Amino acid sequence: MSEIKSLDDLKSAVSGTPAAAEAAAEAPKREPMRDKLGRAYATGKRKDAVARVWIKPGSGKVSVNGKAMNEYFARPVLQMILAQPFTVAGVEGQFDVMATVAGGGLSGQAGAVKHGVSKALQLYDPTLRAALKAAGFLTRDSRVVERKKYGKPKARRSFQFSKR
Image 1 (cartoon, rainbow, N blue to C red):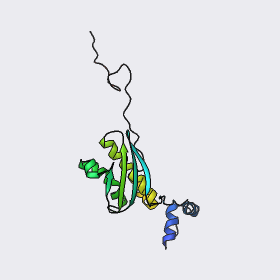
Image 2: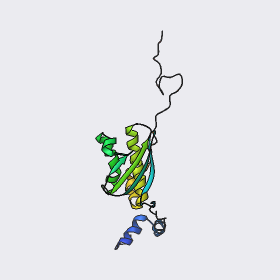
Image 3: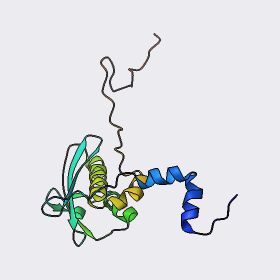
Image 4: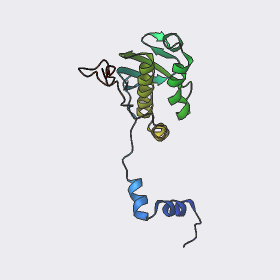
């Protein structure tokens, strides 16, 4: 095996072949997507809740449906869920968030805002994508409530069986 004397030698040794290293270098670079006002926009979804989220550089102020975050999401657990993308990306207090959310309950709405914030962060700064993707924040949690079937009191629950 050849000796590794520089960082370039290390990269080629880790990636396997020099062709693989060249292919990784040629991968398309992601460009930041911002509007005229310098904001990034994304839609987040969780259960039946849908959130529209705008982020822009600021002091870390979060407003949901026109209210402050701790006013709209009173439970500390829901506030923690909203703060997770910023913590993972290492940008706490650097972005202002404006979100409108509809549908579902508070827990689903918090998850939808978290999903939207994560997507908007990676659109604003594509270098944050790796950390957010590794934490699983860019994947929509597709679990939804199962529909009620006819002849049953709930989705799967059956009426009590009576032998006689």
